Length: 140
Image 1: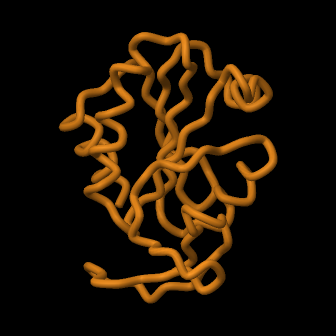
Image 2 (image 1 turned 30 degrees about the vertical axis):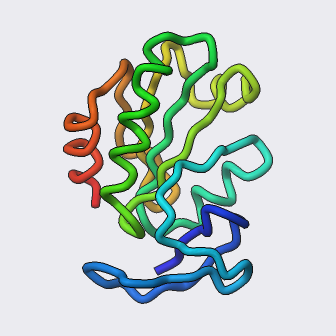
């Protein structure tokens, strides 16, 4: 399966398994098991969505948004449960207004799940860790 490195954003081919003890990027040698959400921009958005065989979970947020700040730790904790099962990413709609407009983001936070390069689900409003984890698990 194709997986985007969270560090250098290069595409890696990784054998599909139930769990991984070790998986490193072929280019930068960093761990592919790192679950820290990556920042998406207009420059890298399409490339990452299209080149990821695992679901991409995107949090559309803004720095001035109280519910976004409240949900951020839940998003990061949920990400730790899905190494090489889902890629968690964030789009700052303040900096990336084009992406917010492109996807019709009317309220934040909004979570959009992409699979095989296509949007498969969307939910607006802050989610707690359990709800977010349950939502993501449906698309694994």
